[in-house]
Image (cartoon, rainbow, N blue to C red; front, side, top):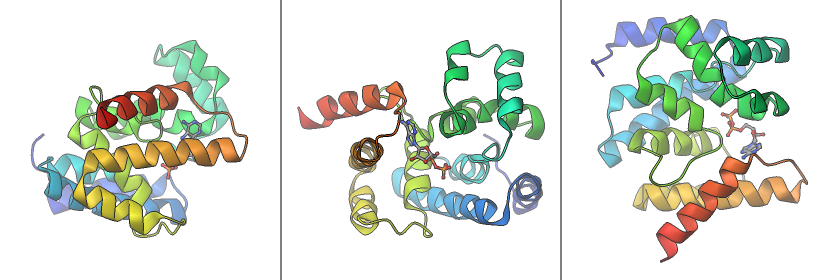
Length: 196
Ligand SMILES: Nc1ncnc2c1ncn2[C@@H]1O[C@H](COP(=O)(O)OP(=O)(O)O)[C@@H](O)[C@H]1O
C-alpha cells in the first residue's frame, strides 16, 4: 500500500471518530498504535497496520437493520443474518469501510474481517495477526492474563494468536455464549500447527 502520511491518517481518524462513541474511538486509536508496534516487530507494513487498527471497529455501532441491509446489498452469505454484532462488525464491517471510507486495500479489509474470529494459520497474513492481537492487547486492556499475553506475543506473534484463540473460546464457553464456528476451526488448526 502507498505510504499514508500524517495528514491522511488524521483525516481518516476524523471520519472514524464521527461514526463512534468516544470510548470506542479511543480504543481504535490504541489498537492502531499497538498494531504499529507489532508490525515493526514482525516486518509487517506499518501503514497498513496503522490504518487497519484505526478502522477495525468502524462499524461497531451500526444498527442491526443496517447490518442486515448491507449483507443483502453486498451479496454476503445469508447465513450471516443468524449472527449478531460480535460477528457482523468485522465481517460485514469491512463492507462499510469499503463503501463509506473508500478503503479498497484487500489486505486491510481482510484484517478487519478476521479481527474478531481469527482464521487458520494459512489464511491469516502477518497483517491479520497483528490487528487480531492489537485488538486484544492494546494498552487499555486489563483482563487477567493480559501481561502474559503481551509477553508471549512479543516473543512470537503466532503463539500470541493461539493464546488469544484458546482464551477467547474458553471465556465465551464459560459464559455459555454462542461461538462462531470459524473460531473453533481456527483454534484446531493453530493447535495442530503449533503443537506438532
Ligand atoms: N468466535 C466468536 N464468536 C462469538 N463471539 C465472539 C467470538 N470471538 C469474540 N467474540 C465476542 O465478540 C465481541 C467483540 O469482540 P472483538 O471484535 O474482539 O472486540 P472489539 O469490538 O474490541 O473489536 C466480544 O464480546 C467477544 O467476546
